[in-house]
Length: 163
Image (cartoon, rainbow, N blue to C red; front, side, top):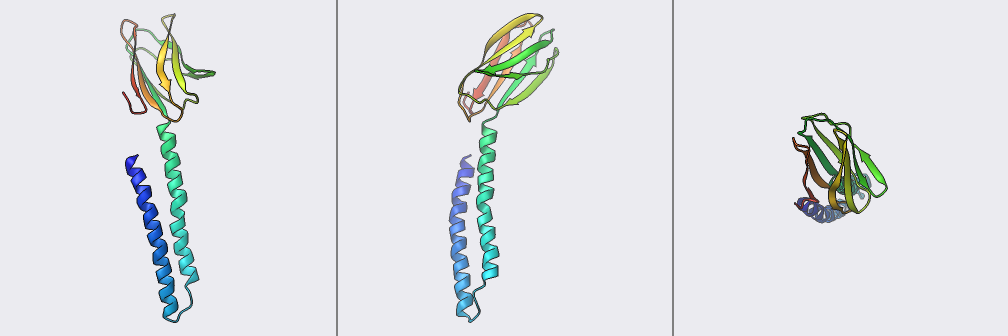
């Protein structure tokens, strides 16, 4: 992200330099006795201005990617995991059934700030707990839910790049 911020700053400086070059080009054309090159300057100005929507699209893409939370579930038990859901306030996110020895990864964009709970059923036994202690809106996280061979649940992960 730091490189992207520097890239935008350098791009702004180069944009200003490009405007200066266009002005010099136009003034030199007038001094040499030709009319002001409106068409050429207009095309070049359009190319310079196109960089702003491209930069905005880049920033919005980064904001979207950073806000995605990745949850991976490893089922090392001998039983199928059913009814696995993540719940934040009034929103529920469903997982497909996870067979023994299977791994499933899902991507979420949580809407609210706060904790995210998990609920699942393993061999008919309901298990619940906290998947993310606290999610900040706009900052994703990574979590791994591992179901051990004896049916215990282990949660590991990071939020917003922080372990």
